[in-house]
Length: 418
Image (cartoon, rainbow, N blue to C red; front, top):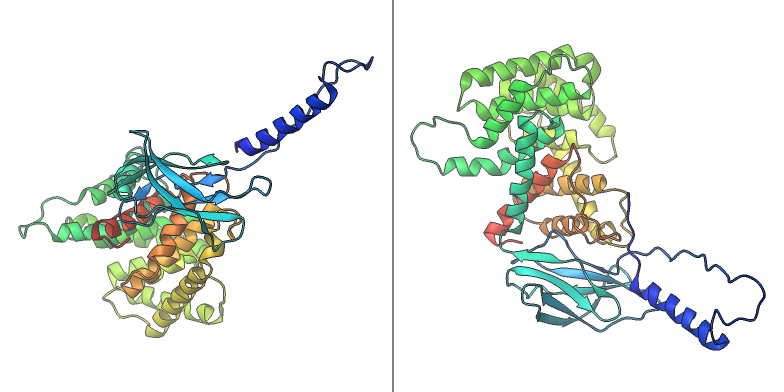
């Protein structure tokens, strides 16, 4: 159930009107009417929080800001302050800036505050934000929190295929760097991330899948096979065979869609079989005609396809990469409208996450950090810089994506690139 906070400004105005009425008549109860005492039956106007901050917190090295939503009847304060909740002292003061998102918003920028602690921002008339933390490992701590949830879900088999696939993608992009730092001796045990997925795979009954899950299971098994082969080649081969079987048995249901494309790219990379190459190439015509934004399966299927060491259809690669980069440019160009805390151009947190995925893919292709600021702004939106001051927690299918995102941001945090 969505909860609304009663605005102190609204209460103040209602109280003032009531007091004025009392002074003019002497007393509400002092009326000479012979009618029963009137019942003042009204509803206080529902309002939204006025001063919004990222409730999940801010990294020491990143930009830090909050937004004040102005009410016409209340006016606009000039200054804001940040209070250390441990000491109770004001530790930062600054002037509000006009926001580029509209006249109804003011921006409080306290990026120069780099001391770890628990804080809240305050101003006259409107009060204060929710409390927030500033820390040097904010994103790393969040990624650990989400990884714990995924680990638990894999152990009790409640983790969804979408979550497991995102978790594997995060390991492939960021987790393998840790393996490269290991000793040169023969690796006797797999990384914990792969072990967690291995246990989930062993406990799932995916042979009977006949719907969208079939394509996701095939993609998971093929990706796991590719990543796990250096630790246990026999298990990796068994997983690849299962992936191929699931795909071929369910092909009449799952072919010609985004999830099937992703499964094909994973199967082709892991096996090198020409039949998968031919099926992937058949998508070219639809991509030549298509004008809409790429779905997740096409995006991450592309990411797998362009890094495979097998032969690839270069024209198809160029088409797909071009679409991803074009979508990313459009998103980045509309970042103000998308992350506007009062009137975001997006309709849901799922749509926000979809845009984040595209920007992460574009950054990976470019081997750069062009879209990091926009990604952070979107994460701030999901963490409290929105009209409800709500923190969007991951649902059943998005835990892996939140881990993926925080794992990415934690890498930037460590490198000082936020």
